[in-house]
Image (spheres, rainbow, N blue to C red):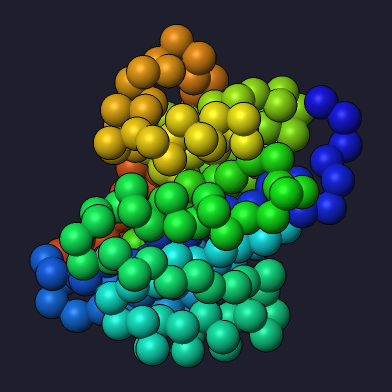
Length: 203
């Protein structure tokens, strides 16, 4: 693949959830010098993506206020998912894809509750796409699929029609280029116990 033009690669951060198991808004939880959402956005920005679209829903005013702060020094903007309460993750993914400009060639699909993601793994995903131009890249650790994963633009219409992201990936299992990463690609925050443990171990 030749050198990527400006805005060739964007990240969609899925941050519209209601944080029911956590009991408070996950995106706004403190994470070292920033928040969970801030750490995710910073890692993605430093990995080499040119644009970060944060899909909001639950706790919209507070999450968008946090995103506005991040936008002062990161390439961040938000888009609202009006179906966040009933549409599950796929509705946010569809909203994120629809918000990307025509110049974007691929999207990195990232959970908003993955502040543990290492910069090394994020950069490895981006650099692998830049060198291979693969249609579908998925990070893995010990043969387990992780996040964030990457999908080229020509596959977005089919992805948008899929019932779940897992169903889409399973349909295209033979096309996936797996990128061996560290164990942080398997981590996310669901419960207060997850948060307390992983924040203590955060670097």
